[in-house]
Image (cartoon, rainbow, N blue to C red; front, side, top):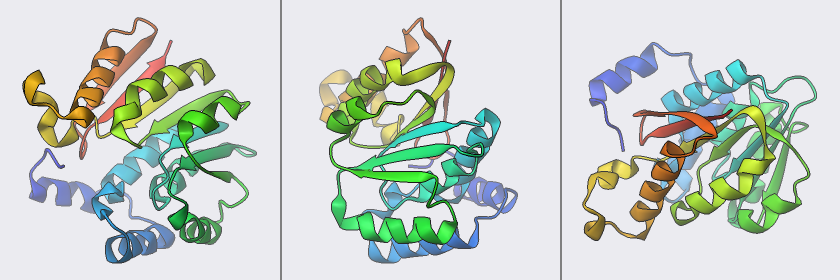
Length: 213
């Protein structure tokens, strides 16, 4: 999933702000107790998300794909006073664990958890978002993009994770699986969308940062 040499990635982490105690604990817990811990944003990407959020200074954030809550806690660092973060995940098995870490973080009054299918939940959120983070089932990336776009403020940002998909997006179209095709479709949708500015960062598994103009 990483596109830079391991020693460079380690150096970058060593010269970036440290994780908070809660994030370190959550990182360890995820790797020890939860299936597919590579889905965790982790130290370097987490600091990138936190920095981007602090630059945007959002009052409303939407996250599609909570997992164990690491990225939500990072994004919440940039919320303005009175700001809220809505996070959605279809897996209810982790809900109590995530809620516990959110409580420990001090962000429990700023984070609203939703359990269920984001396709069904997003239309019912009566909000305009300054920042959206997509990190869920890859087959639905194009659909999520179309669904959330009207709910993003002009000048707001959408960040999508895993847009390089371990390099699989470089495969010929006939060799792509369903997930890879969906990500490739999403990347092309963004690249040809005249309503946005965008840049693809090769951080970890690829972050697409999109600004609605």
